Amino acid sequence: MPLLFKDINYVSETTEFLRDYLAKNPEVAKGQVEGRSLLWDKQVDRGFQKDAEESRVKQKPYVYEAN
Image 1 (tube, rainbow, N blue to C red):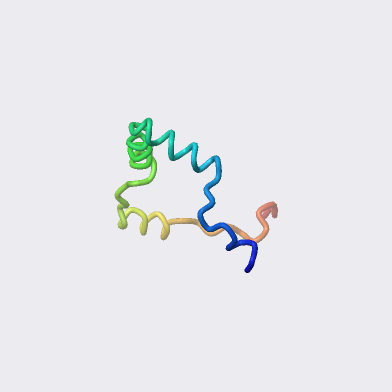
Image 2: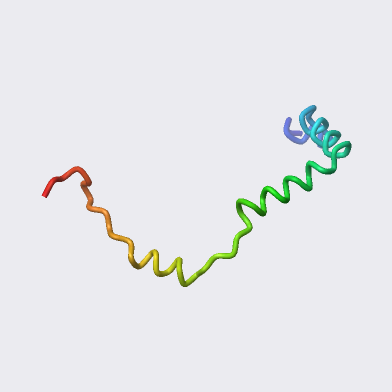
């Protein structure tokens, strides 16, 4: 049997700590959800995004060339 499958029920000390911490402090999980919503869960304005992509000026292949 390969070494990877020897002990399938192994849980690291870090995982045990995090599970115990979150069980004792449920407000942390709520704070994580609130933080995610502040940074990532945003409505995207597709029209604005399309306009921004279309108006982008293409970069020259060699940016340091002086014309």
